Length: 109
Image 1: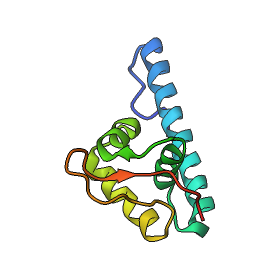
Image 2: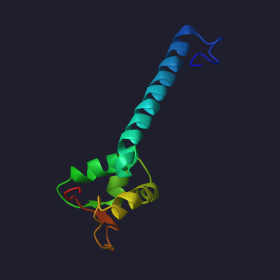
Image 3: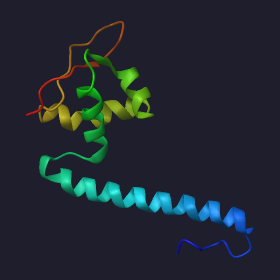
Image 4: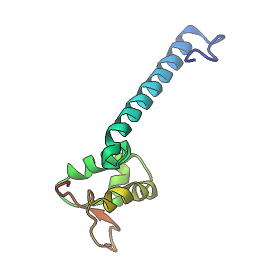
């Protein structure tokens, strides 16, 4: 399956494409395994990463900064944060006109 479409490719190019496909495949498998482990807490791998980044901070983190750290749009991060907020994993400060939504570190339940 990983070799699909590489019949006529140059050896060097085929090697790069194969390596890229292998990395994607391994990454997908790691994510599936993490999602299964986190399912008990009702979290996904991405939500756990968001929590990890927030917990590593010493001060509240603006949504735009968090989006930058996760390489996502602020809309995606906001959507990602809904479940952890509902479950009490991610406290949210009130709306701040200058910085928007801010997340603060706290002891996870």
